[in-house]
Image 1 (cartoon, rainbow, N blue to C red):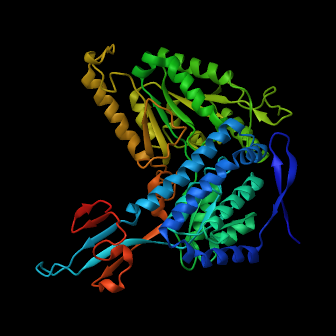
Image 2: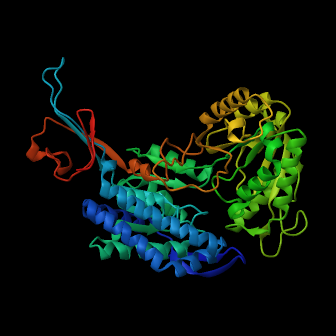
Image 3: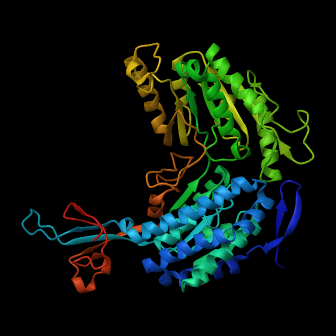
Length: 532
């Protein structure tokens, strides 16, 4: 008997509607086979680009309905979701532009060179789509990292049909967005099966194990992502698994920066850690701040701003309960001080009637984190609006803590003007030797660089711009690969290179033929030739 999938309002905990039914093994098999059969239809680049732009346009046309359903299922708010829809449409169009340009094919030609020792054959390389891609939706981004999100857009741009495993927190939003993408496909003459959708835990397991699935993308927890990653590796024919699993996103505030702009740093940190009720994958979860008077001012500004932040509703009851328990467990460690309740909108230990939670700040001496022990819990992500401020008594403690951190998506340095290279000619008031300040900042960035895929100076990590230079990834467990999930280079994950050697021109694919009939950008005999 089919198992219903319910859409639930996180504000009330009440069921809204039955959005779908869970997919059994047969339904997953049907969706994957239909997607596989649609692969040939995606071969034409112009058709793919048209499809991606049509998908963006349909999302915008139905924005009011999409935002309303997504808000009812996630409580993220119309303002946040309207911006997320705009971002989603933008990245669909960005990948359409990348498909049109063709640089992602990485066409490289080395002509035969018989005069070399040893002689070199004629070699022509480009990239082909892998095949059906499984995408596992994220709870905290019902649009930008779910059915119409970056993994789906980049895979479709590469020419790979997609089967999405919907997240249980927003099944109705997933159904609506999948219908819009299928309508966009059919408008352009593509089969709707280029985008499949399945629901249910068992469906997710069946999907990663399906022999026709050739790669997978995931955004979620370490536990869930690692289980799928291991399953992908344990298949008779292992497949690449591009997972984003968890990140602490450390911030280091130097003493000089704290003296210079303590209040600004405190308010900025509060805004970043509470944005989206602390449910961003790039939320700053660990802050190293000096145990000085200037550091006290940073902490006072932070706690004041966090205390003024209204309670918020988390994505579901499971996430809320895990957040409350996680804050309580961390606050119980000896030497850890809770600057705010960090638990509920009512009294400490009481859940509010609407299920909302208050943001929290925990402080601890940085020395407690420098060695393995019970304080390792503070070096794990706590999903929700809480951050840990570790107070360091000496600069050496910064390095001792950073050396213990796992991989992260981001790492941030809050520096003074002098540490950023300002001198008297810049109009900044510099109270120390500029050369030594810059050297100190450079050493800090050297320590942060191995930890993350994106380094920030005097900014905040929440907000990931969709741009060609972007990299959204990092060492494990931030991600399971070295690739990005945001920006044009995300397309690389769904492609594989193939080389044709000494192949007669008539048998070459059009992308590799002499005279460049498709007008693609190419690198020929070591020289880049822009698009013809």
